Length: 193
Image (cartoon, rainbow, N blue to C red; front, side, top):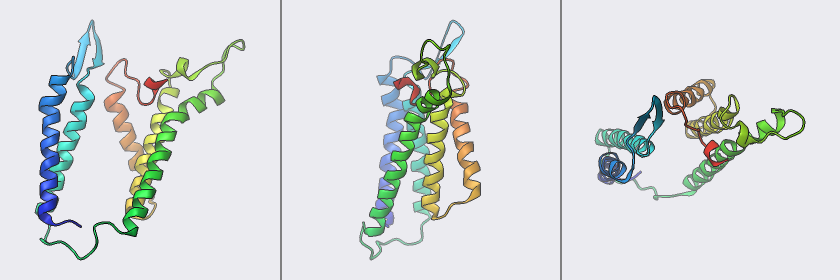
């Protein structure tokens, strides 16, 4: 664990970066605002995702600052900054991330290939089905669930049944924020197809 002062400086740097993103970079570098309404059609503007990401960065930096400000030990510990356990954790986290990205990207097309049926003369492709239920959500739900569930299981060191429900709730909240209120948003990775 780093010293309290180092952690506070790190939190302050990320707080500053998040504030720059929210109040300077996203509004000045985007052609449209966060939410655009044109002829009764509500769409996500160019500044939406960078502003949400910057706001989440600010929240996490504030939590980091508060937790480290209240920390009792003020000095560095005797442990090396990175040891074998840290490297093993990073490798496992990288594997979880790679699995989740693969599920994000390939679960929807695989579901279409297995279950979607055309009229017999032509093959149905994922590009044709990417904005229809349930195919538009399959990759997002499976990839998001695996990312949240396996990461929390890795951090806690055990698998808990409650994490299944909390992971599904996190994914449902993300769908409610990004898919339901905006008319023409394709959840990741549907825009890539």
